[in-house]
Length: 406
Ligand code: PMP
Image 1: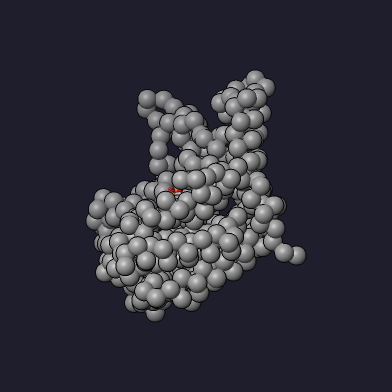
Image 2 (image 1 turned 30 degrees about the horizontal axis):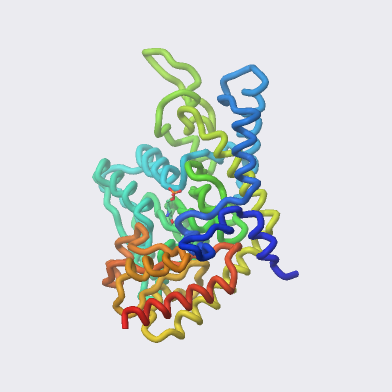
């Protein structure tokens, strides 16, 4: 059955917009995806009909709000195939999920002289929290390098892993190179040394059906706004037996069992890690996005994106002077490139005038840019609502940029 993109596009109101009088071509999906109507409807319905703070009320609206929030947790559990909803913590996004682990796991398990490994292709969100931890604990940050194609050099991991390694933090899919990392293999290697693994799934959750149990991931961070949900909501999956051992990372309402001035006891999982009023409307809207994505068909969506990636790669490569940054063996939906020595910012600005939205710059991965000795790239990132015709427009746009710069 062919993937009906034009039908799918009808679900995304924003895609009918014009920019500078040109139809919007939205290729900035790695930064944030657009939201289908059902997600927008959930947000509106919630505000109009059932808005009430969760977990604290006996009145009907509060009960309904709470049920919607907890059902959303079940939807995320099923989406990642966790064993229990106790293993799903709602956060404000992937960044918060990673900071939670860096703080709480760090408090429990990382001490002076211990080591943390991140990869060279991490988003700053998966570098800086670990640097903060290492500074706090006098621990050491080690870096797993990638080669010039953008493939992690896995053999180096064997050298980096020592008896002092406590955790490896690595992304599932690189947001600037598009590399799909062999996370199952990394987890296996780490576990053979008794080392835990956090997967930054900000981009990975949009790359096929997730199964944290099959991966045996210890932690998996998810971002709502990158999987067709709203901003300000995300989730952390953590193995229950591990989460049980971690201290809370923020204090406040909802995360407590009892409070006296002498001693506070903490709530059970998952609430122990959810201090303050949760973004329950965001959670419900995220659940709506996940269900929509499942209805579209995750595997079919990925297949469509992969075929667009292949087409875009071939078409861009055929333009003299275009250099693709990130040519890993396994890639998905992200294509970073440079057009001759034209600054990415100039390319992005001109494409914008044609209605084409791409991202330019370092993509919060300065070490990746340093690896290639460049200031930044132009990044086109795809979603299942993108079309071949849009790729053609991008390719036409890039040719025009080249002409304009002589
Ligand atoms: N990690 C990666 C690989 C990302 O691409 C991003 C978003 N650009 C993040 C982390 C941060 O995610 P969030 O916006 O949910 O905090």
